[in-house]
Amino acid sequence: MTRQYFGTDGIRGRVGEGVITPDFMLRLGYAAGKVLGKMAGDKRSGRASILIGKDTRVSGYMFEAALEAGLINAGVDVGLLGPMPTPAIAYLTRTFHARAGIVISASHNPYQDNGIKFFNADGSKLPDQVEQDIEAALEQPIITAPNLGKAWRIDDAAARYIEFCKASTPWGFALDGLKIVLDCANGATYHIAPKVFRELGAEVSAIGVSPDGLNINLECGSTNPRQLQKAVLEMGADLGIAFDGDGDRVLFVDRDGELIDGDQLLFIIALHRQQYLGGCNGVVGTLMSNYGFELALRERNIPFERAKVGDRYVLEKMQANGWSLGGESSGHIICADATTTGDGIVSALQVLRAVSDFGEPLQKLKQRMKMLPQHMINVRLAHRDGVLDHADVRAAVGEAERQLANTGRVLLRPSGTEPLIRVMVEGQDAAQVEQLAKKISTVVERVGNA
Image (tube, rainbow, N blue to C red; front, side, top):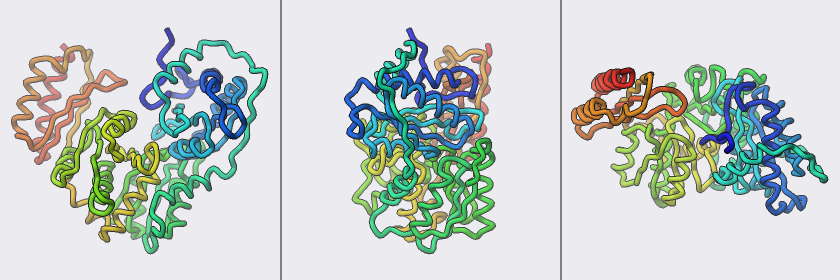
């Protein structure tokens, strides 16, 4: 029995602690090379090739070298992309007909963290069985292959991805006259996003474009957009766009400095598809998606379903339903008719396409959807066993739902990593929502600490 390494978002942790060590990366590279190298070789060299990309955190250099060494030992060729957004690696894996793509990134986490994510040859996440095979191969000793792999650097990776992003919009689409502030989180989009939007005609001011290995996501980017909000107001910009460290999330700021989250952006994209692109067959959100988002789609006869939190679950439900649009309130948006994974730049362009076609500024367009007040409390417990099914907890939830009278919802969700239960209430009245969340939390705390 092997240890379970792969989570819903790859392998992630604090550098030097647990599995995130150079030694583990060497063994992981070798194991991945042995498993993926068994398949038929690609068209480029007659044997398997795997691409490696990374974000801007300092530990990426160390892990890149370790993975490269492990893969070469397994007889696999390695294409080095350098700092690139996660969705760019998914795209380039397809473009180069590689066996797989590896991303070295901890996404929106601080620089002390890092992680690994795999894409298959189609630019999608590896099947569970392949992940299990790699885990099993981690236990094997490293034996240098008789025919070592070779490494090469892909110097035009950034230019290829920039053109891909621009091509996700229709021919002739332009952002002429639009004044935009970009916040690249000192992350992987720092040398990509400004060029994309400038080449489409926008007047671009960029912040968070000076990575030093330590400042990724530091008081900037989609997880901390205050600098962007301030810059939009000071510069008199039409809007601002914030990415996270690896470029798979995006949030907007309107010209009044107000933040626009992933639910609102998804709604704008869905509305645009319904009115201008022949219809929107459905949208997948998550358990945390705002209830106002669901109501706004329902009013327009756009089907909506919720998945568990996590882009993997969103994509699975999209594929099961045959839908092309889904995402999370964090700004991880998947436009499956444009690319295979969440892509902050591509999603931002879909929003700007809607703004252009509707002919309305962002702050007016977002008003077509009413966000409901939402209050969440994290309740730390001595134990979680049986708490959600306890009669007192069920009664408290039932009473809250009765008071909301089908104008809101209640959600109790255990944390996947901590001894917490998250209590969330949504409704029309902010004061009522907060009061109900506190009442339920009190009962949950009493039961869970009994």
